[in-house]
Amino acid sequence: MGSFSIWHWLVVLIIVLLIFGTKKLRNLGADLGGAVKGFKDGIKDAAGEDKPAEPTAAAPPPPPPPQVTTGQTIEGEIREKTRS
Image (tube, rainbow, N blue to C red; front, side):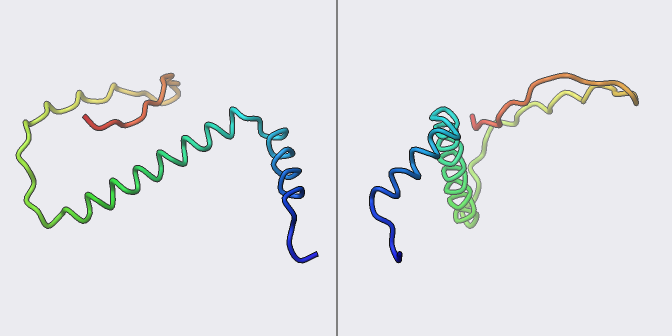
């Protein structure tokens, strides 16, 4: 009763695969990997705050947001923020 054998874990794995499917589990793994990578990059950036920032070319300011009136629905898509 104390520990589970390999057969118990195989049955649990098969049940999880049947419930969630391989596509959802693959997407979950990719999302988790991206989150870990972002966390590591954030830690690197935080550790490098003592160093002076390298001069970069000034980017043009973003365009002003469109005028929105009450009761208006705006459709669009969400894009991930990327570093360039």
